[in-house]
Amino acid sequence: MRRMSDQPERWTRATVYADMWVDPDDDPREQEGPPPEGEIATLLDFLTGYRFTLRMKCEGLDAEQLARRSVPPSTMSLLGLVRHLAEAERDWFNWITDGEPLPKIYGPKDADFHGALAEESLVDEAFADLEREQALVDTTLAEHPDLGARLGRERIAVRELMVHRIEEYARHCGHADLLRECVDGRVGQ
Image (tube, rainbow, N blue to C red; front, side, top):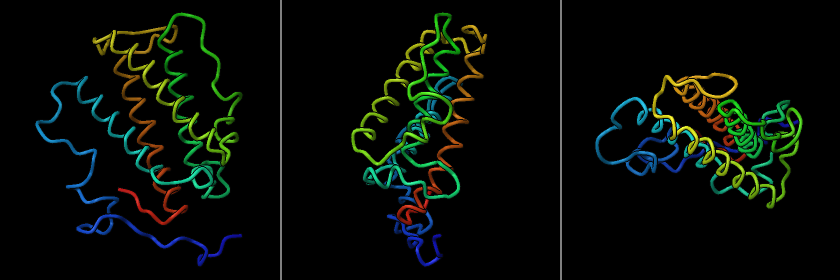
C-alpha cells in the first residue's frame, strides 16, 4: 500500500503560472494567427489540441512509467490510454464504413489496458497504432465535408462522430493529468 510520503512531489515546467504544465507563451498547442473559421475547422482544431495534449502527458516517460497503473484500483495507465484511443479510433472507423468491420487491435474487452506492459516495443507499437488509426478515420471523414451526412451501418452523423471523438480525447486527457501526476508529480493544464 502506498503511503502519502510515497507520492511524488508536484512539479511543473511553468515559471509564470506555477499551477500550469507550461507557460502559455511556451505552450506548443497555442498557435499564432486567427482562430479557425467554420464548424469543421473548429472541431478539427479541438480534436488536434486534445491529441497533442495526450502526447504531452506521455512525453519524457520511459516504458515502465507509461505502463504504471498509478491510480489503484484502476487498471488505467498512460500507455493503456494510448492503446485505448487507438482501439476507439478503430471502432469509429468501423462505425462509418459499410464494409466488414476491422478486428480489434489488442483483443477482447479491456485488453488495451491489460496488455499495456512496460516494454519499449509495446510503447512504440501503441503510438504507431494510434497514429495509423487516427489517419484512417481522418482521411475517411475528410471525404464527407457535410457534417450532417450519415455514414456507415450505424448511420452516425459526421458532426456527432466528431463531437464524440473530441469528448473521448478530452475525458482521457483528464485521466492522463491524474496518472501523470501520480507517476512523477507533473501537474496538468
